[in-house]
Image (cartoon, helix red, strand yellow):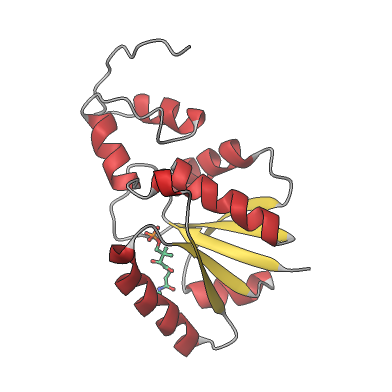
Length: 168
Ligand code: PNS
């Protein structure tokens, strides 16, 4: 059984994350989406909300599970019996940080491999940070996030409520 962990803040899940999850689910027997409880990014959504949004968007993918995690990623990966970590790479700008993190994780535990996957090219500009900013200012994020995430964003305090045009 090949298990892979896809860790992240997922604050919130975007279509880019979902695209990576779908690709990983085709390659591995089991994909664990590991939602970081403690992140220095002052998340908009609580860990429980972020997990629930991933669960809602991945329900149809039978080999995908969602769990919250705390502590060192390599410890978590080992505890899950996983062989590798997946990280999405959108552009060269992601590379430096991701490379540093992958090599540090390897230094911490050389059995944990990091695999980089590229989301569909139409998602290379997408980030949770931009999605939150657009939603906060009343913009339309429906092309960027799964439906359940769009609804959750609209329901958050501080997000400007605007009537969006009906979709065909
Ligand atoms: O979506 P993000 O914010 O880029 O995800 C970053 C995350 C959660 C994967 C990273 O911060 C992490 O692995 N945190 C767990 C703590 C840890 O192991 N830190 C050392 C990483 S080298």
